[in-house]
Image (cartoon, rainbow, N blue to C red; front, top):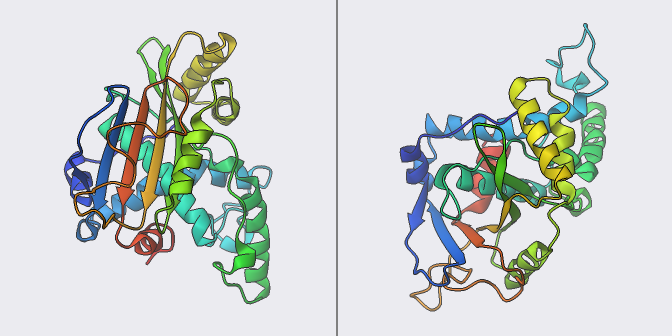
Length: 305
């Protein structure tokens, strides 16, 4: 499937409020948003839930592959392999998924690198194998009435390796001209080491990496014209050795805190220059989202609270 859902900018801007930052290095930009929880109310909240639900639909399709037949509609959670995904996963996993989806949301609605036509054709959640395998254990315990605490330490699973998300600019002829590699983090409290790790991970000269292969594999499972158009464009890019595109890199950082010292500091990431752990020469984009109640956002989006 190709992700289609988008927001009207006015309610989105009311929820994630842009904070002006100084501008420094022309090869680097940082944007900052702070959540206004009062704006996450119906009917806009329903749109947010639908947006995230669509992002996970491909992973649900993956979980159900091989189980479909004429007698099974998956309406009964007891026989649906995708039941409770991602709602009963550990909070740390849900925070990670939130960070990845926020990266896609930001570049598709507010642009990046001077361009406003980025597209993220699909999210890569189906490749978080550790959690998809874990889900079977969760659902089995629920069916058997075994006590289950989703946020207990033994329920935590390692994050998915590889690219967190990839955004592209594609023209009307189906030719990809630009790629944005997104590395996402989402934490309850700021961690400078995690910020450094994200920039270090981006510092690879390789574009022919796992995210492209994974996207091509996803798109091959859908027979719509648009999915096949994207797959053909990505295959052409793959075969060319990615020599025909411009690369941009992006750190998407969600955090459940605002800086307090000094009082003039607005963002955790430096707005004027790129992080020292980023060693490449591509244009670098920083996206930062601050939530005073990150746990509440996770509860609203993933846990129906």
